[in-house]
Image 1 (tube, rainbow, N blue to C red):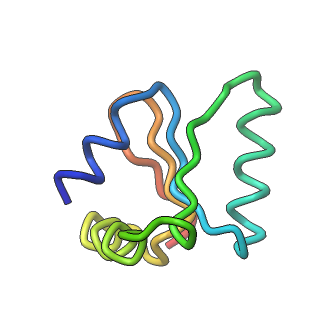
Image 2 (cartoon, helix red, strand yellow):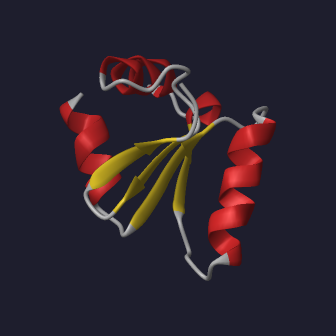
Length: 79
C-alpha cells in the first residue's frame, strides 16, 4: 500500500488504469481535456500490477481501476 501512496503522490495527477478498461480511458481523456498531463500506470502492463490493484482496493477503490490521485489524495470514480 505504501508503494501505491508513493506513486500516487509523486505527480500532480496520477491515474491507475488498465488498457482494457473503457472507463479508465474515458477518465484519462476527460482529465487531459482539462489541460492536465496525468501520469498513467497501466496495471495490466506492470509486473506488480496485480499487487497494486489489490492495494487500491484496500484503500477503498472497488473496483481497483480507474483510481485517480489529484494532489495528494485518491479520488474514486465508481463504488
